[in-house]
Image (cartoon, rainbow, N blue to C red; front, side, top):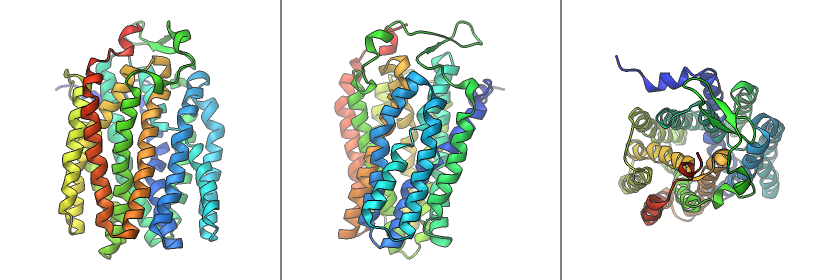
Length: 419
C-alpha cells in the first residue's frame, strides 16, 4: 500500500503536536472578523460601522505582524510571542466589554487596534517550524498543503461557531470564544520549544534524519533588508491583497444575504461551504508531487478563483449561495499553497517567517478592505452589491497574477543561489 504523505510528515518528532496547537491558535483568524461584524451590527445596527471596526483590527494586524515576524526571526518565537499574547487577549476582551457597554466607535477602534496589532501570524510560525524540521522540497510541499487544508478546517469550524454563538447565545459570544480558545492554543504552541527554529539560523539537513543549523552564508548581505523588498515579493503581496478583498467582502455579504432571507443564523454554515471546497482541493493537491513551475500553477489558481467568484451572479437563495461557495472554494487552497511556496523560493531562508507573514498580512489588508467596501455597499444597496465586491476581488486577483506571470516565471529563486 502506498505511504500516506501526510502521515509521513506528521511522524516527524513533535510535528503533530505543533501542527495541532497551531490549528487552535489560528482559530481567531476565522472567527474574529465575522464575530466583530455580527457583534457590532447587532449592538449598533450598522453594517458599515461593523465593517470599519473589523477593518481596524485586521489592518492593525497587517501593519504590525511583519515587524513582529522580523523580530521573531532574530530572537525566537516564544520570546516574542508570549508577551504579545497577553496584549491580544486584553484587546479582544476589552473590545467585547466596550461594545456591550455601548461605547463610542473610536473606543472600539482603539481596542480593536490593540487586539489586532499584537496577534502576529501563527500560520507563519507553524510553516517556519515545518521548514526547519523537513529537509526536502517534496515533504515540505506536503506539509504546506496540510497546513493549507487545516487553515480551511479552521474556516469551516470558526464561522459556524461564531454565527451560532452570536445569533443564539449572545452577540459577543463568538469573539469571547475566539479570544479564550485561540489564546489557549497559542500558549500550547509557544511552550513547545523543542521544535522551535533557532533564532537567526537556517535549517539544513546534514543527514537523512536529523536537522542541524548553520549561519546563513549571505546573512550579512540581507540582514537589514525587509523580506518584502526581495525581488518578486511586492507583486506577490499585491495579488494576495486582491484575494483578501474577496474573502472579507464575502463574509459581510453572506451575513447580509442571510439576514435578507430571514435565516441569519445560517451564515456561518454557508461560509463553511466555501472553506470545505477549499479544504478538499487542498488535500488532493498536496497529495501529489508537481513538476510544473510554481508561478504557472499560482496563476492558474488565481484564474480559477476568478471563474469561481463569477458564479455569485447566480445567487438567489441560501442553498444556491452554499453551492456556489462550495464550487468557488476549490481554487483557493491550491493557490494559497503555491503562494506560500513562492515565498520560500523568493526570500532568504532566515527571512522565511517575515516573508510568510507579509503574504498573510497582504491577505489581511485585503480582508479589511473587502469588509469595509462590502459593508458600505450593503448599507447603500443590498447583499448582492456586497457580492459584486467579492467578484471584483476575484477578477482583480487573476488580472494581477497574469500580469505578473512573465516576471515571476523569469525570476531566479533566491534559495537557489544561496546554498
